[in-house]
Length: 188
Length: 322
Image 1 (cartoon, each protein chain N blue to C red):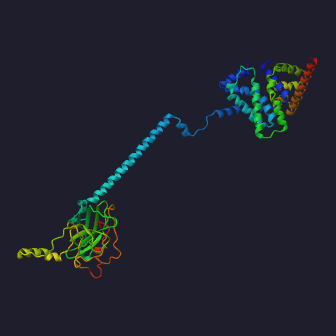
Image 2 (cartoon, chains in turn yellow, cyan; image 1 turned 90 degrees about the horizontal axis):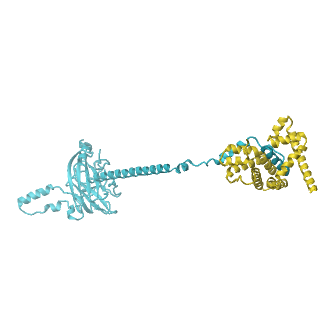
Image 3 (tube, rainbow over the protein chains, first blue to last red; image 1 turned 135 degrees about the vertical axis):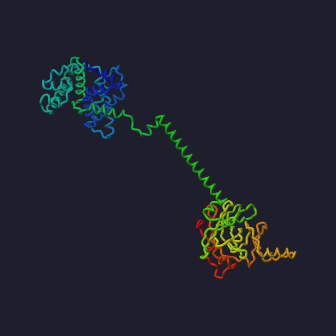
């Protein structure tokens, strides 16, 4: 049976590198995506991603698995802070980056908020309203953990098509969730 | 809901909230991160000596080695100084007492030993050595006189001069200058024939004739005239003092007076016979005074030759082992 993040953290505290490898495998895309969304630079995003997991390895003893916050929250917070530090070193923050930082600052609220469980249920429900080809790529990306290249190869479609399907799916999901939230507001 | 689906939904929620499109991370990111961790956890490269220094055994071994080396160096220095001391002692011993056996073997046969009498602790001997068996046809020096003296005291501005009288009829001629060290000096000069008397005086400067205080002097041989006079005294039973007017008035150190040489007997001779010092520690060859023009008189002539007496037999050699 697959180990939980908390179990992996306990193994990392014992300096078992394979546990860290598993954690990286699980969370690297999330961390990398946030880093690249803030920094806009693949090389720097990779460095930040590496730093995040190195910090996890180094500071794992300070990670309290009994606390309610999750490993994802910790990783994304550290990634956000590390990326912002990088931006400060550049001494030049353009509008897009400021916007990215502002968005990233809400990560912990999103992940650890009380509505997260409800949010997940709503997303799971909204997925059923997506066209089949869009839902298929979303599930392959987020549930099966495949890369976009692997999806393209698996479905025998161009990589650009995979990206556009993912983009369209996310946009549609966001719209569905907004509408659902408006409907809830009207009901109240 | 499975763990994967739960994690996927979470990531999807995050992507929707932050407008994040999924981006594929670089390949082998896990390996890169693990390598980075391994590199950071590796102990910093230390200088090998620093690393070794942290080991107690190394420090102990190094200290022991250093102490041992110090002991060896100190022992070597001590041995060297001891050896140097022995060498200096040997030099002093050789300077103060020349081994006559060695001289006999190496320089020739000792023909005569002339004790030198002096005052104030000064004493010495003059050895007359035969250095060559060749006939005297070429007027080459065949003998050497070696002076060994001790207890000679002089000031820096004073000169210790050696004088040689070739025959009782001749006057003293300068044979050279000696430079005693700690009162000890050796000196040698070559002569063609035997010598009659020797004398060492303390001069205020280099002189052509002895004028200063007599430090050492050989016992003058009985003058033939004096023997005759003594016999005549015995026969005549009278007291005559004919020798006192004709003899050299060179006083022995017991007189404690400067040497007085009669003008007709002790004509100043040249000081070109610079002696040779065998022991470098207490003898410096001194050049004669530039204004000295008198030349040594041939021993057989009994008087200074008019041409200055440039006979080679009075040119001192610089080695004893000729």
